[in-house]
View 1 (cartoon, rainbow, N blue to C red):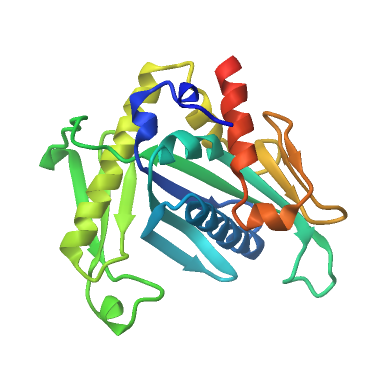
View 2: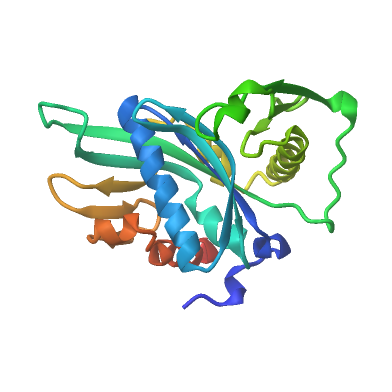
Amino acid sequence: MLTISYFKKEIDANDAFLTIHSGAGGTEACDWVSMLYRMYSRYAERKKYKTELVDLLEAEGGIKSVTIEIKGAYAYGLLKSEVGIHRLIRISPFDAAKKRHTSFASVFVDPVIDEKIEIIIKPEDIRIDTYRASGAGGQHVNKTSSAVRITHIETGIVTQSQSDRSQHKNKDMAMKVLKSRLYEYYKNKEDEKNKSKQDAKKEISWGNQIRSYVFQPYNLVKDHRTKFENSNTASVMDGNIDNFIEEYLKWKSLS
């Protein structure tokens, strides 16, 4: 059972932005992102957390990338254990020959920055672009440039939001995400011992995964950092990942 002692930093208590990107695997990888998106959404439901869609880019077979805000006590402290590359091995539903396929997706987690932490962003530090929202949302989002993309010039960090019909609200959300990512960027720059972000930025392919989800020829989800395993893959994909998170936090506290 986790105690507050596992959360060593005040910011661990904050809400979190969770982003999933597809990696090697094409259509398979986009479907894998959809599956992980559901898994984390179900995890949030189990924790009685609230979720808000920030940005979603659809692609053939599923989702190319998605960002959600997860609101609840210690959301960031818990979910930062998920940062890294997640590998799926299964018989592809898209392959008529029923061959096994391997897909990859990367997960990034940033803390939502509250008023206690001041992140100063000057107008000249960023470039703001507007564009037509894509995907679901009705005719309105496809006819107006309501989606907003913000680029931080110095770091190259890009955030975007298209979940709302209001361009103003999308800009506010994109700025909120940018502040969170800048906080993480500069924190990691100062703390060379923090390896989580460096690991997450590795190529989204073979050899770099933090966790493997095997559906064929057997059922097993294994975390390669803690060596914790669970053979009930259906339960894990339904959001039951508490044991993986707890084992990671215990392992991290000893390192």
